[in-house]
Length: 234
Image (cartoon, rainbow, N blue to C red; front, side):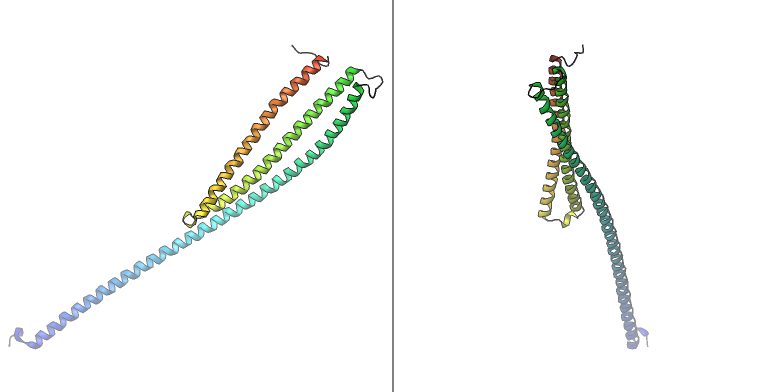
């Protein structure tokens, strides 16, 4: 009998082809499974690295913030000591000013002959009076400079607080900020600009005061020349 007409042989061939097809399907499924597992492993590794980077960035951010807070506290302490020193000098200047005013009253009385000082010429009394005026003016100017320094310290302290707050807020990822957060940031930046403008105003005020002081000095010098207490320099 020809093999082509053998039913048993045909059955064997059909089973072999079916087995080969099943084997191919198993191989394909196994390959797909292995590919999927490799892909999952890559995703897991990627997410792991991403988490590690985020943790590292968070640690660096916290370290920077701690250092910024430390420096802020040091600067704040320094400003506090400076403010105390300014307050001390203002108190001393106030005492000195009362002493000058008391001496000035005595000299003015002597000039009006309300309390005569025997043997003290009027010219000498006038010289004492102008000397007291110059001392008082110098003291008033010193007090003004101290007040300006106190004002600058207050603004510097406010600027430092704002800078710290803004820096903390900027460290937060933009995607995590609400509209309210962004609004607060804008307000803080606006307030910081106002502080800068006020510090500039102090500088302008001090320059204006210096111009006024020069004018006052010239007026006093003219009066002293008229009284013959100074010799004109040509």
